[in-house]
Length: 118
Image 1 (cartoon, rainbow, N blue to C red):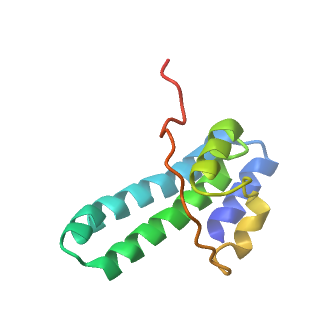
Image 2 (cartoon, rainbow, N blue to C red):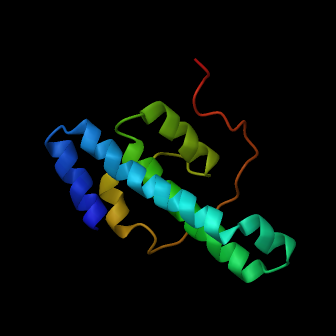
């Protein structure tokens, strides 16, 4: 909730740089978590319970990040939400209750491109 309070504050004060820095802090934390847990090795070693836990936590955090980034890059985040099995983007205001009613969804195979090359 501290992250949400910071994000709300930065949006209200139009502090885009600080907003993105706060969100990127979560992105880096997720990246470190994913690399430390090495889910590809868990799957290979048939440690499926831990694999599912890591993937679930990563998936949930990615959804959270997408909702936070939506006001900054809506087109890319709309695409990401679609890739993650959502018919619409989540709003920041919906994040306070997110995760209370877990909804497992089937993911479709999609082109993994969110940003075109410059």
